[in-house]
Image (cartoon, rainbow, N blue to C red):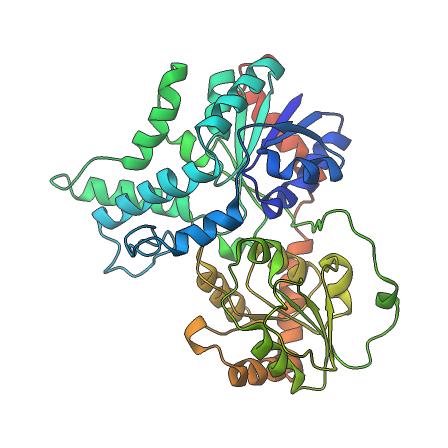
Length: 425
């Protein structure tokens, strides 16, 4: 069969898909990956066939422009949060408007009309039997519907869209006198209408949800879910010679991830953070680039800075990892049983994920408003000194490694095509 993967132009979201793409390829299926021009080189470097759809996107400059918008210019500043859980906030109007903004504002920006038109044009020509789409890339289900392909949604984080949709439908049924409009549904209906198709809930959540996160992070209800083991992929990389040498002291990895680096999502002063970890008898490997180091006057002697080190090679030698709670970094730490010190922002419910990891005894979480050199030093010392965190990390590692591998789930995806595709493949 032919399988078309699609994601918006973020290399971390692509990397989340690469192991499954290769599992399908190794099983004998044809695979293409479609995205905007920005990550074509990343697709090719993964050894996969790339399809360029849509136009270039400048996420770095656009992120800076968002910071200049008035307080009511983005969903975040308007007070809408897709990960909101407080009952008093979750009114029908709030849930409706949050879904509408996160789809028409965020997803529309990341996967716009030009990307949709090009993707449909390619899909009509190539005729995929299955489309696997990143959970923010809402051109994927449209292209699948237009061409008769089966389609599955692949999560990169907690399933806030599905949770909010379930809540939206429940609140709307409970409030028949309240507003009944559906901005997210209307937005997707508008994408489908030019191609002669109508909206249904499969357009929001797919015919199947592929979930590489731990089962205890699942927050949606009765959707069909395909659990899969998270397999780290860091892009093309070389293992540095120094990794063959044992660390002189407990090794700590400090990383903000590729997305935080490229889009400027980190919220800490790098110099203060480095000085904080310098207080401990540890060897720190910090993945920071030149721009991130511009404001740093000096690097402590026990901190070794590298522009890039493949986490999948580095973390097995580490006693702890300090990070922003990118899903890929979290998944790699889980796979290798490494305790985590989490200093997240809040773009996609990261504090909620952090609390869940902390509850499992595998991590400590510092909320942004509590982050200081003192709290960082004390929490890192606790993470390293208390053996219970290593035990908690080993437990969730065991849980992850018992999940089906990407190769194991290929047959389920083949069955999905048999049930849903009308392409004849």
